[in-house]
Structure formats: structure tokens, C-alpha cells
Length: 349
Ligand SMILES: [Ca+2]
Image (cartoon, rainbow, N blue to C red; front, side):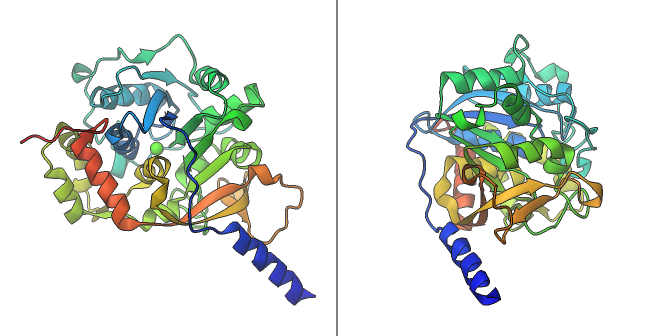
């Protein structure tokens, strides 16, 4: 009986596993970039900027408190957006704090005190792209209502804005095309506590709402996945040697992390951006029912039902967890994004 049960679970597990990805037929994909404006968020936006206008249309940036407080997040994204070619894209201010808890400190060794490696300056940043007439959550809802089933969200910070949108308009997620999330841990390894990854720990209630209630294609780039694709500093030096304004910006904001004793560059948000933009880099993935721990020492930890325990969990709320990527394709896309802006070369001769 036990053996039969194990076989049944194993079959179900195998059925959920696929090696090929069916990309949504959306061209260009309409994307919203939800961000807490750290160094890797900036890298991720520069990666999206490398894509051709035939591939993506960036509808807006929605900021959330996380790596830095909300006012600084707005400043940081204004600065990075100035170096991109998304001419019509505006920035919206979202949640200033998580649903219940206080925002934990960001990882300053990597992001610096300002979230951009201590490089942000009032003098060099205009804020003309800021839209302060509409809250980010309202922008998310309005955008999805206007484009049902067509929008992909690249969610790179605490999930407060997304959870609030779902609670304000309960059909929000079922009208979303897709959300690609950087956050959570799939093997129990934390980075801010022993049990939890930063984005999920920063707002566990929001992460739980997204994991349990969102009914759309959900793709998760976990902390442990990103740990497998760290970029060695030697490779990073080669990227910095590219002659383009984008590469110079990358060097400037990454210098702070490079000067510490780090021997590699973490690539959390960059992975999520590339998985959204080029799902063909995904080599192995698996669909699971997921929730988030809200209590005690495991608060913020991702809980994955690998044993078919949650019989009532809706099948359309399952999350696709990425387990393996094509390393060389990932690097190729990353490097190319420093040479191109909106599909055109920006490399200097
Ligand atoms: Ca982030």
C-alpha cells in the first residue's frame, strides 16, 4: 500500500516535470517591472532594455519598499531608466511597507546604503518619469483590466504591490498573463534568516497571497537557483570591458560589491528578467503547490507540497519552480544586453 502510494506520488511528480517550455504567444509581450530598486534590479532593467521592441513593451515600473525605502527606490529607478531607451515608460510609487511587518534592512554589502552601490546622486537624476498621480497598485489593476491575459509582471522585490492588487480586485491574477518572481527558497536555505529568502521574508503575508491565491502562470526563480549561476569576478571584468554606456553604468553600481571581499556577483533579479524574456534558457522546471510560512523561526520560508498533501489546493494556483538553466545562454543574453538597447547596437567603436 505504501509502495503504491509512493509510485502514485512519483508519477504525479514526473507528470509535472517537463523539459520544454511553451512560451506564451504574445508579441511584443507587455511587461510591468515591479522592483525594490537594488543593484540586481538595476541590472535586470538593463537586461530588459536590451530586448527588441518586437519582443517587449514595458508598460511601467512599480516600486515597492525592500532593499531600500520607497522614496529611494523611486530615485534609483529614475536614474536607471534614464540610461534605458524605454521612452514612454513611467514609474509608479507602491507600498511603503509590508502588509503587517516592518521592512528588514537590505543587504548593504551588495546594494550599498542607497541600493545602487552608493552611487546615486540628486544632481545627476531627473525625476520626470515619476507619475505621482496614480498609486502603483491602481496602475497594476488598470493595466491588467485594459489588457486582460496579456501582461507579464517581472516581480523582483517583496510582493506587497501584487498582493494588494489581488485583494483590491480579486480577478487581478486570473486576468494576468504571467508573473515571474524572484524570491523564496526551494531547499530550505535562507539568506536573511536560516529559513527564509529576503523578498519573501520582507513581506511573508504578501508572498503567501501570491503563492496560494494567484491564478495565472507563476514562475519562481528561487534564492538557491540563483546561487548556482553566480558570475565570477573574472567574467564580470570581461563584461565591464565592453565599450558602452550601459556597461559603464553596470561597473559604477557594481563597484561597491566588487570592492568588498566578494569573489562573485549574485544574479538574483537578472535571472528572473532573463527567464521572462527568454524562457528557452529554462532546462528543467516542475509545478508545485506552494505556500509561505507566516510563523516563528520559519517565517517567510517557502513551503512546497512535494507529497500530494494539500488535496484542496486549486490546480490553477500551482507555481512553476525553475530547477536548471542553460548557463551559456544565460551569459550570452546578459552580455548582449550590455551591447544593445531595444535591439540596436550601442557599442562604441
Ligand atoms: Ca530586488
